[in-house]
Amino acid sequence: MSRKSYRVKFAGGAGFELAGIIDRPDTTAAVPVLVLSHCFTCNKDLKAIVRISRALAQRGIAVLRYDMTGLGGSSGDFSQTNFSTNVADLKAAIAFADSEVGDVHALMGHSFGGAASLAVASECSSLLSKDSSPAAEKKLGCVIALAAPSDTSHLASLLLRMNPAIEKDGEGEVSIGGYRWQIDSQMVDDFRSHRLPDLIANIRIPTMVLHSPVDQTVGFDHALRIMSLINQTEASETENSDPAQSKPLCSLVSLDGADHLLSQHAHDIEFVSDLTAAMVHRHCRP
Image 1 (cartoon, rainbow, N blue to C red):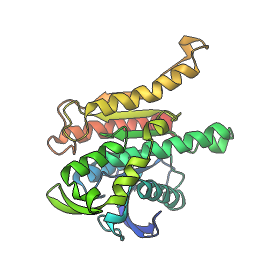
Image 2 (image 1 turned 120 degrees about the vertical axis):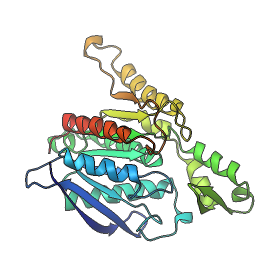
Image 3 (image 1 turned 45 degrees about the horizontal axis):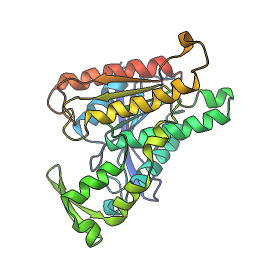
Image 4 (image 1 turned 180 degrees about the vertical axis):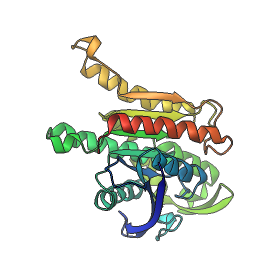
C-alpha cells in the first residue's frame, strides 16, 4: 500500500511536549494502529525504527513512532528521566494515537522501549481480566518485543559499571553510541525499583519476542526468560484443563546473525517487518 507520513506533537507523561511521526497507509479504510517505542538513548529517527514503521504502513498498519522525554525532538532533560517516565510517555503516546488515528491495537518496542511495551501490556492484561466487555476485549490485541530486556535492573548495573561516580557522587557521564550522556542517580534507583519479571508474567495477550542469539547488548537469555515467564504462567493456569486446548501466548523468533540495532543487514528489518505485520493483522481488528 502507498504510505503517507506527518509530524505530530503531544503532551508526554512527564509533562513535556513529545515529538512524533505517524506513518500510515494512504487509505480512508480502517486499519490496525500500533505504537512503536525506541531504545534507551535512541529516538524515533533511528534507522531501524524508521524503516520498520514505514514498512508496517506499507503493509496496512498505522504507526505512531515518537521521541521519549529529553530525546530527539522532544523537550525535557534526559538525565531526569527513568523507566517510570518511559512508561508514562508510552501511555501518553497511546492516548494521543487513540484520539489522532484510532484505537491502538498493538504495541511494539525496541530494547528498553520493548521493556516499556511489555510493562504496559501487563497493565492492559490486568484491566482486561477485570472487564470482559466487548470494548475491553478489542482494546489491545498483541505486543511485540524486539531485542528487549527481561528486567530493568541489568541496565542500572551496566551504567554503574561504566561510571561508578553515578552512585558515589549522584551523577556522572557515560558514553553510549558515540555520544556522552549525563546520568543521574535517580535514574539508576528507578531502574532498580521495578519488578519487570512480575509484570511480564502477568501478560495475557499474544506476545512475540524477536531477538538475535548473538546480540551483544541484550543477551538472548532475556528473550528466553520473557517467553518462559509468560508461557509458564499460562500453563499453570490451564493445567487442569484439556491440554489440547492450551496454547502458549508468547512466541520467540530467533533473528539469526542480527545485531542489536538491526543495522548490519537490511533483510533483518524486512524480516522483522513482515513478521510484525502478520502478527498484528492476525490478532488485531480495527
